[in-house]
Length: 405
Image (spheres, rainbow, N blue to C red):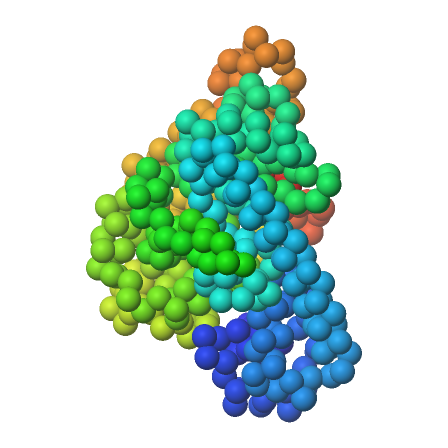
């Protein structure tokens, strides 16, 4: 069951805010503090403020308007600081002959919403060629950033499967994710990193042209990213919805064909279903029909909505099994399981700290460690269902170990 407050939030966030429904819910009475808390959890406070301005700002309690305006000022100042730092870093990379592209963060806010103030973000994402990775790391370190895991051999062994490394600046308080791939090892993905570079487009921010993903690449990326994160937050659906609204000239036949060729059509169809159903996104009718007649996508959509509402308990086993169902074919689900069993992660090192010369042993110990961990989680889940203590809030290890920001 969707609460009145959650439905109100959805009505405010729609591609075209539903003025009549919004005002009707206001007149019935709302818990405004609950609305603010839900919006904060889903990262959509700037969009809520915009929707309220469009529909019923004068009916919003003064304290709620004050909270939203105060947050908006602080968020805009923070976003401008992040944007300034992004421009500075891109200039450094370019001066040192490193081809670079930026995505998410300020670039996504500008390209999808046309306004840096309308999207919350907490890091910067920069992509370089793998051949330039070491040089890019040196530039970040020279300009005051420190790697989340300083030892290069450690990063290469336990973190590189993610296709990105994280760096943090004490001076700015900003995290930078330095990518050389767009997906983790073993995950079927609709975009091959190599083909992205020849298709880049440019977004203008503060008079600077910033290379970023082409619209159709971004569409596939947002669908895959939201699915990887199990669509727990509305902001990811808002991103996809606004991109649909702004990019009416996308070749959907080619986009869907690319997703089928990479055996990852379910994430795209799932994103289309959620965006069109929850937020009225202007998705092509034939793709909406295909999404709604696909039983696997329908099941994933039901679970995603439950997670958004917070009506399901987060458990690693459940998350992993659900992630398997997002892949089109059995062999890719099997490959994901194999990757899980054979990819050394930070968790392996933390569970048994071996000297560098013995790190190869983790290939042997990892399956046993995961098996024991799985048994413990099953026992906890069983105990929890019977009223005992227990928690399943950790993220599935294969996709998230080491990303501790």
